[in-house]
Every structure is written in structure tokens, then in C-alpha cells.
Image (tube, rainbow over all chains, first blue to last red; front, side):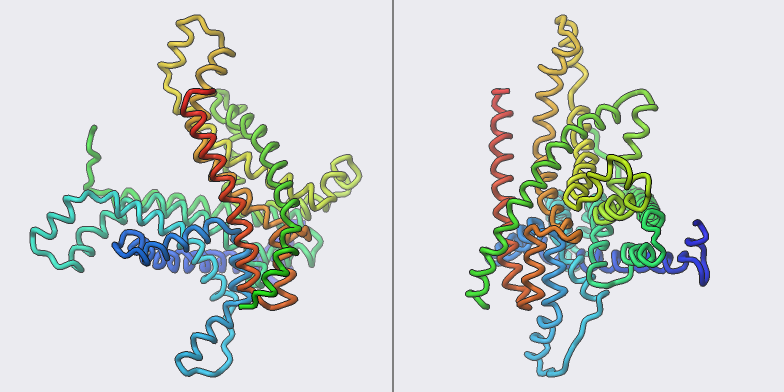
Length: 236
Length: 226
């Protein structure tokens, strides 16, 4: 039975490995996309404009209160026409088809982004006010202040939360398998179907996910200690 | 925006609400009972108890729910000895498999929440209880349990909302709850935005009610009525 998971023509080892690489790629790009959205909407939530705050509040409430699968269906069935609609405004009349990877990244990324928004908002609020004031007093430009003073502190404060968002995002990518993207979940389903060994392949898939989870857990631990270098916890 | 379609599909999709609520209710009840057991095992000093609980939580939290569902629904059905045993009454039904998967999932997440709540009980309280001659059961009932509930309730409220959202996965094993019906209508009418708004609003409403209920419960336990 185990020859089924060897590498080569008769085994599914290489296919599963490719599936794992696909899972990692789509999770990473979703997290990155989510962080961009998260930063944008976190700044909306902290802005003085009532409209921007309302938009951000609406986005996080809807995305966090609605099943991930429903969001994926929305973008899978409606994403292509939405992009074509926008392209039409800019004068492009052709047909655009989005790849499952792109749709997956947008779908899981916008779910991930809702959670990132809250993490980043919390981290910005946790930076002591004095840091902003000190930078202003020194006559720093706003861009320099954000880059040199605020960003490093936000990164340190947000990292544990981003680690949690990563774990959730990684698991959410399994849902993109319904759109046909061949990642771990899809690949093990195909293998299970054509060999009639679902138990074996789903067990392998469980171990592949646990492997990624464990590795990334260590990665985030290391990143946390790197970003906390030179930071002494105040004793209370 | 096709409002006529939205109006009509609302009455279609609402038919999935009882199934969604049934699955949430049953898995939450079974899951909570299991979670208390797993949490007690997890904090045990005996490795024989704490290790299985640790690996159970680790596996459930580290893998996607969809994979767990497929593992139980398709994976276990592969074996003849399971198909011939009494287990088959449970495992041949997609509904029971869905409830079983969600029960195990919420048990693992809730066990961690309960563990966190239990560890927030300061040892001084327990010592004070025993120095007043309280028995172990009385201490558990009067000191540990109320503080644990108070600590764990907000996080448990989040877990309930995650459970409502998680039930959407059972539509993949052919069960027609809210998301399943929504998907069918989308592929028939090709109106993803309209159907998303209708189905999404129903979920948001359910989650709103749960949030209110948890807020009310928090208010109750924080004002000394338990």
C-alpha cells in the first residue's frame, strides 16, 4: 500500500509534494494580500473620517460573520465578471478569465485581511503615544516617522497575532479546492478517488498540514525573538 | 441588482436554517461535554492523560476542517470491518459525519478555552477554600467553576460563531443547509452577488443573536447570580 506514496510514475509522492508547494504558495500570497488590506483598513478604522470608519467596520463585520465558503463562492462565480466590469470602465472590452490561483488568493486574502485588520489596529493602538509625539518634536516627516519609528514597533506587537492569522489562512486555503485549484486537499482527493485508498491519502494530507503548521510555528517564534531584540519588557 | 430574485431566493434559502441550527446545537452540546473531559485530561499531571489530549488538540487545530470531514466520511468508510460494525449506522450518514466532525473540532478548540479559564483561577482561592474545610467537589462547584465560566465566556462566544460558519462545510457532503441551497441557486441563476447578500444576511443575523445572548450571559455571571 505504501508504494502509492512513493515518488515516480506509480506513486503519488511527487504530486502530493507539488500540492503542498501550491498550498504554501497560495497561503503566502493570501496572507500578503490580507496584510495589505489589513493595513489599509486598520488605518481606515483609526482615521477621523466617519465614512472610512464605517466602510472598514462593515467589511470586518461581514467577512468575519459569514462562512468562508460563501465568500469563496461569491468570488469564484462573481470575481471574473467584477474584474471585467472594472476593465470596461478603463476601456478594455476583451474577455478576462481569472486563474483559480488568483481567485483563491483574492478570496482567502480578503478573509485573512479582515482578521489582519483587527490585529494591526490593535498593534498601532498599543504603540505608546509618546513615540508619535517624540518623532514630531524632532521634526520628522510623517513618512519617516511611520517607517522608522512606528512600523518596527507595530511589527513587533502584531507578530503573535499575524502568526494566528497565518494558521487560519493556511487552513482556509483547503476550501479553494472546491474551485479546482490543485493543492494538498484537492490532490489527496484525486489520489483517493483513483486508487480507492481514501484513508491512506487523507492521513498523508493530515501529516502534510501538521508539518507546515509546525514549521511555521517555529518560524514565527524565531521572528518574534528577532523583532524583540533590544526590547526590554518593563517590569510592573 | 435583481430584487425579485433576492426576494424569491430568500424563501428558498431560509429552508436551510433549521438544518444549520440543528447541526450547530447538537455539535455544540456534545462538543462542550467532550471539551470539559479533554481540558481536564490536558491539565492532568499524569502524562498518560495529558499526552493524548495534547495530540488530539494539536491535530484538530493544525488541520483544515474540510480534511477532517473527508477523513471521517470517506476515509473511515474504506474499511470493511467498519462498514460491518455498529459504527456504520453513524458513519454512513453525511449528517452524522458532519455532526461528529464538528463535535470533535469544537471539543479541541473549546478545551483550550476551558483550560485557559481554569488556569486563571488563582491558587490562593483554592487554598482559601480548603482551609475553610470545603471538600474537593464543593471547591470545584463554588470556586473553580464560576471563575472558569466567567473567564472563558467571551472566547467561547467567538467559538460559537466559528461553529455557525463551520456548518457551511457540510454542504460539500451533499447536505442542503444555508450555503448548500445558496450554491445551488447561484449555479442555476448565476447571480452570485444577490444570493451572497441574502445568505450572508441570514448568517449575520444568526451570529448577531448569538453575540447578544453571550453578552447577556456575561452580564449574568459578572453580577454574582451564579
